[in-house]
Length: 214
Image 1 (cartoon, rainbow, N blue to C red):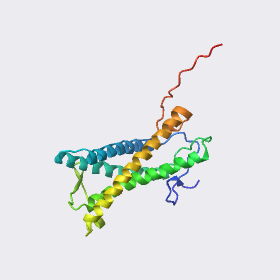
Image 2: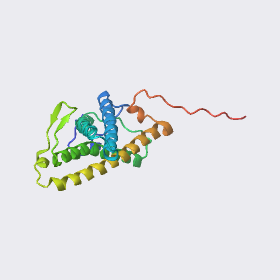
Image 3: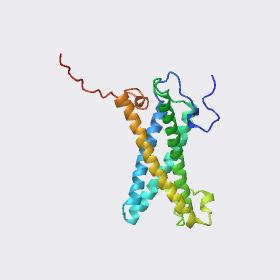
Image 4: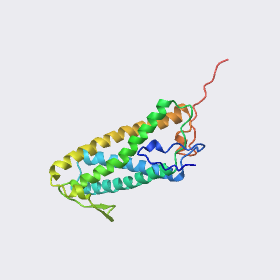
């Protein structure tokens, strides 16, 4: 049997595992850790940019935002490596080909943003003219990226990175809504096991049976 770790840049390169009906426990734990972290990150990002906060509160929120972002970056990298070594279960055989392609494409975009967004945020912090240090969860000092920290045009670079980070956040919101909506459609409308692969034992929400008149 060939190794599932393939020399490829595509997330979809690790093909589905035949016979497996659910994700591994490690994959499930990483999935929900990253998912909850992303929701928290997006919520903090919206508050930081649209709500007027006291300076100290805003500073603490920025530090927490950075801490969760680095956590997501590390967890997403681990999740990607785990996916290559432990291919996911196959999608239903009767799923249309275009839908399988859309699912795989969405996963590629999600992984790109899960890793790319924290990297852009890290670059933004490193290029910020104020040069505020990052201390993860108030305990672990985290370095700036040298190439951005040593820029001589920080005042011009930081706004560009901030704009990319913001647009990436809105794109991630849209992809998460699409991802969650598709999973709920599979469970509530199509009634297959797609969502149950990631939530083993999830009960079916059966529709009330309609009474027919004889």
